[in-house]
Every structure is written in C-alpha cells, then in structure tokens.
Image: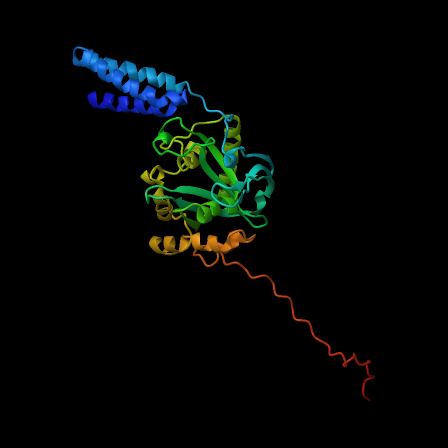
Length: 346
C-alpha cells in the first residue's frame, strides 16, 4: 500500500506540475502539494491515517485533472494550425487542409494548406517511414499511401503544440498536448526531418500491404481524422501516441496482437519484419541499413520528383521505369530530295 500511494503521490505532483490550469502557478502548486503531503504525514497519527491523507490528496488532484477538456481552440503553432478532414464519395476522396509547407529552416517556413483529390481505385500500397531523433528505443512512424496517378498522401499522428510550447516526454504522460492527425505532402513531412532538423534519421520501407488492405487502412485514417476534428482528444505518450493510435483505429477484432514494441516503437520496424509486413527479401539488419533516406533526401531537396529519388535503388521498392525514349527521326540531307516514283522495270 505504501508503494502504491508513493506512486500515486508522484503522479499527482506531475499532474499539478504539467497540467495545473493556471500555467504561471503550476510549479508552485506542485511544490506546495508536496510540502503539504509531508506536513500532513508528520502530523497524522498511525499508518492508516497517513495513507488516508495520501488517498485524499491524490483523489482531489485526480478529479481536478479529469475535469480538463481538450479543445481545438488554442493559439497553435503554424504547422498544426489547421485540422485535416476528408469528404468521401465512393472511390473519390477530397482531402482538405493537406499540409505542404515551404521550408527555409526548421522554424522558418511558409505554411501552405491544400485541397487534394484522390481515387481509391488507384491506391496501390503503403510505405512506412520511421523517424529516430535520439534513442533507438523510440521513433515516430509516418504512413505514406501510394497511388499510381497522384503523389503519395502521408499521415503523421503528432502532438498539437501551442505557440512557444516544446515537446516533453514526461509531460506527454499527462494532459499537456492535444492529439493531431497531420495529413501532408510527402516532401513536407519527410524532408523537414531529414533536411532541416538536426540529429534525426529517417528509414523508409515498402510494406507488403495489398491494395485492398491499404484501402481499409486509408479509410480508417479518414474516419479517425474526421472524428478528431469534431471531438478533440488528448495525446498520451503511453496510451494515445503516434503508434498506439494507429492500432486503435481498427475494430477490436481486426487489431494486430499487442507487442511491447508498440510502446517502445523504435523497434516497430523489427516487429513488422518478423510479421512479414516489410518487403525487400533481405535480413533485417541489411534491409534497415539500406532504408536510411537522409542522404538521398538532402540530395533531392526541393525537387518535384523528391518521392521518386528517395526510393531509387532501395530493396523492396519497384524499379522506377525510365521515361520512354522517342524513336530517332530519319534525317534527310538537304540535297537529297525525295525521288519521284519510278515505273517498274519491264
């Protein structure tokens, strides 16, 4: 019981530190709570009265914390200022607020939000990018849907940060950030990580997903994205993050079996490889070595064929067909005019 209540007290301290409604007083409220717990524990007589003090304090903070509601109305950073949504009419899908920023640096960019149309009959498969920013244990997956007639459509499930707000792994365990589904151009969502952010490595894989399964996954994203636009939710680093949200989109009966690598998602590509979801036909270590796209992305930079160039020569991806070469024209010398037709020899 003492261990349980010690954990509850630490959680309550963190909830006040990160989520106290009056931001300017948050750290002070957390420290005051800790001091109050110490004073009451000293003054209370008997172990069960001391535990009762901890329970009352924890419940009070928990009730206050659960009263916090997510919202779409905050001063958001420009790269998450809009929420994507979709209209579906049979195979025809209209995507609104597709992000396609013009980057000069990581923090200096011109936000652009576009409307795009795709036809699900042209959806051919799914590629997945794994973005590492420090630890091999943690990564950020970006799912890229491949069409044979339009550029890829990417989805990145992220924290929706306010202006001046930075990501915090511990803060992500509380109600520090809302959740956002970023629907983006591939050159935007990958290039900002490979070309402008320092210390990030991106690995791109072709999956073995069939067009039929890709269609179902695409519709799952659209459903979750539209629902989030109307009913905002909190991000949680353990339960509602960039990886668990992908799994939770599916119906319970269709979800993949739970694996510890869904939480420590830096090993998520290894998990997918073991389940036969990655194409390439190589041992995993060799496949991953060939999947790093940073150098190719830097070389491609702002090229309109960015998506093609970061895939060229990588295992698992279909070879890019060269453009058709026009047939050479027969040159006619200026002094060789076409001879008139001669009558057949007798």
